[in-house]
Image (cartoon, rainbow, N blue to C red):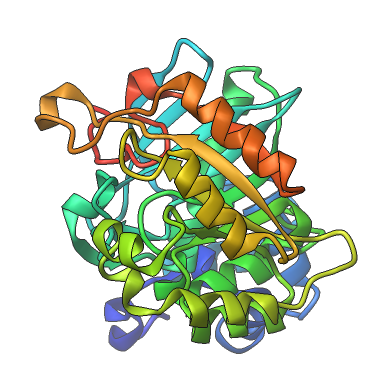
Length: 357
């Protein structure tokens, strides 16, 4: 018979338990054999099952205990918007009512998912709509990975290609939620779970040296650094909070980042018309990165949706972008032009602002 204390105890969200934590819960709380952990983990993360009754190889007693003591707290899909280019944006509602956005980006035969790690963002970069929201709170591991479960379910229900890659480039600064980020990355690699290898997960950050050191030591992801300016002075204007870490200190930290033979640090560079997109800026960028083991992603500025007010910046001239790219390549810096996806549904880089509805 269940005690009064057990009845009032908050239910455990199983999606917020790592593999070792789930094992402890199965053995110590549910009083079940250890092997049940593998079965339950498979149902939660590989099969994406949301109700205990469907877990057919669990014992009747275990399913009853789970129903009484635990929950599987998926985020709820409030709104879906689909771009003309096939990009899909999901507005998700978390258990406490807070909302975040995640984006499914079509690639060659598969999808890449852009994940959020915070409700809002504290960094307030001048070109980013998410930064205008401010920070509400960090997301838990279950909420971060719950985006993947919701995304995979949507793709499967609509007979679309599978999810293959992850980029932690959505709402929030991942390294300001380092504990939950690391728990999420560790859980991702489980072969009986989501099973996405570290080489298919990219963590985007403005660059926090102390956290980058820990991420590097974990070996769980390769970083993409939001640089966006070739000098400390210009970075202070565009990214005042991020620029509290001097560029010299940030780059020295990244030079020490442990990488495998063919891995390189990616530097993201949003091109703002008339601000950081001239050949003079390209020369400064070459001076900064020319001797480093890196690659550069050039991203044209995506203005915010008209309903949010006038844009603070302008998109760069396309010919100027090509000239910028060609200059970097002529100096032997591996450079890519990143195509903006989902602009028409406010799902492109820097546009996430809870406007899916």
